[in-house]
Amino acid sequence: MLELKNIRHQYDSKVVLDMPHFKAESGKHALVLGLSGSGKTTFLHLAAGLLKPTQGEVLVKEQNLSGMTGAALDKFRGRNIGIVFQEMHLLSSLTVEGNLLLAQYLAGLKKDASRIKDVLGSLGMTDKLNAWPHQLSTGQKQRVAIARAVINRPGLILADEPTSSLDEVNAAQVIDLLIDQANQNESTLIITTHDQRVKDRFSEQISL
Image 1 (spheres, rainbow, N blue to C red):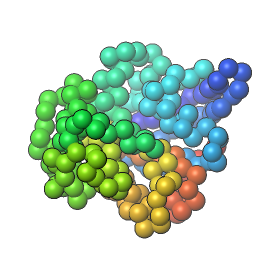
Image 2 (cartoon, helix red, strand yellow):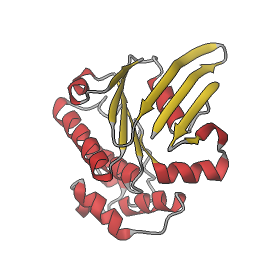
Image 3 (spheres, rainbow, N blue to C red):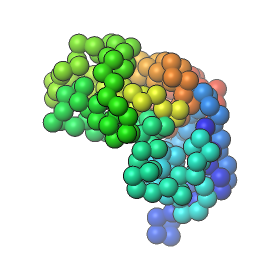
């Protein structure tokens, strides 16, 4: 599902990520650990095709993301990669349903209202379908962000520091939700974090 080959990425002359090889098979879950500044977010952005590596290849479903550009890359990402960012980036001018419909539209998929209701139901958010982002708590916004990441049934789910600002109870719930959604969709799940509380939940761990 995801493979990085001979990856090296740098800003100006500073190397921020040097990874000879990384591979995550379809349906597998892995944790990428490291302190702040170790390259975790760079790794995630490369895996999502949001950055092009200085050298090397990033393969998702055997497609080389470095060779894709513009609308083709955006559509491929929308259909195959779900991303949960540290900042949730919900559009304040759209309702919860509108934010999820936008994710379908940007992927070039048809409107699927029943899929939206199913995903929100699985996250305990059915009653927030028509709510605006400013009406949601931080935890509810995070659930909507997870819903947006999985709405198109992506084969790859990437989550960047999803528990960094949460207490122990809420951190455990978010990890449960991500694992549950990945299992429901048979998706590969990659979480980048420096949160040591998460370590016990993943047998596959990579340290940067």
